[in-house]
Image (cartoon, rainbow, N blue to C red; front, top):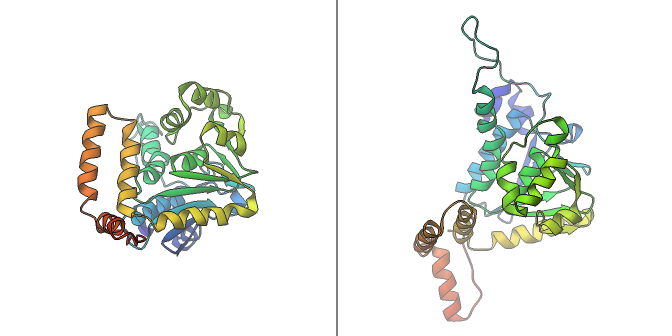
Length: 285
């Protein structure tokens, strides 16, 4: 993972410091740690995050993930456009500097890959939004399974302000969260959406005072971490898939999901605890 993070020429140690990590009570806390740059995401930091979400899927000690950011003003304003990029490959004489397909490839392997890493993570992901989330930053929150936001935070589909179209999966995520008409409104105008309004629209699960953000997030995350981890992973997969497939496929996948989950120890524990009239003690596998 660290080798991949070196792709932009930044020292490995500096890259590692851009995402703080700690695991407590089964919860992996990932903190964007570039407050001097508003927590904008560099290519190396993005690659590191992709790897961390992938690692969380297979780490049995991790049963929930929290994504948050350092500082009080910014959660993430998007990609850091000033960050170093990998040196371009040598091209044949006369070839264009940016050949057809290069930009699309950059989006696929960059911002889209990071959003996909959150959507595909097999552990529930909570975004604890401490400040402004714009562009890619907003989509990191919208890709998360649950969003808790500080009262002062806001969300911005900033692309139109720069004459750009949404990337990082925005045109996929927003209609599924708020409907087509409202998604167009947010993307066409690019207005600031305060946390309270975001909650009304269904973009945010809970809004709390900034001083309560960490404690509220911890309560939810540790509750998830005590839950049946495989059942939560399959539930996340089924819900995410449900908006992309027809009814027959959704029902078939639900049936197979139940089949797979019944083989988990937590499933057997849940049934046993019900029969024995006691509290469950889920292990996470």
